[in-house]
Image (cartoon, rainbow, N blue to C red; front, side):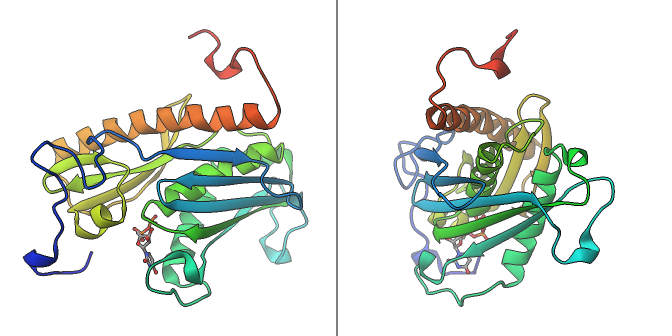
Length: 252
Ligand code: UDP
């Protein structure tokens, strides 16, 4: 969030309460998930979410590289989040910068917490996330794509991992920030939720929220994650042509 003159700030919330792209405060951008988008990977998913386009490919469980990272009693999850040079307005220098390294680390930790890693000792589960087009929320799109790709690879998991950012824009708490809202807003808080248990496995914050705003944002994010969860499950059902009842909804 850079400092800009007031004249440069677009109107983020109109008089009708609508956002810059016409959404209500608690509305998600349109999302499409294609599970199994790549032939070569063990598992893959392509997520188109608003103007974000993010591909995830999963390999493994396989031999650990570098070897010294190997754990005797469990698999490790390694993640590489990368933004293509052409993914943003101002060409990004290719390669892993500090931001990509941080995002790779938090995503790997979030995914490791849902994978049954102890079933595959001395192996690595490698997750590659390639951002082809970016418009804010790419780490969340990466988590969504990666967890569908892990399921597509047949890797046992506690649950899928829906993820979304909430934030504060022109004094309003809003769901799923787009680029202008991220740039000119007051706060950006990406999160990832284990839907069945309600556990948060990723929570970051840029900017400031009061306690009450934080609580509102959290509730909005959890509700958003539940909607995204439905889209993720549907993508896997479409991939495997599964019809009928949803086992994760049994007993509800
Ligand atoms: N961005 C950019 N160049 C960069 C990094 C980010 O233009 O080198 C843009 C991109 O649209 C990204 C947004 O800024 O989605 C917000 O970035 P942030 O670091 O908040 O991560 P994200 O919201 O994508 O998870």
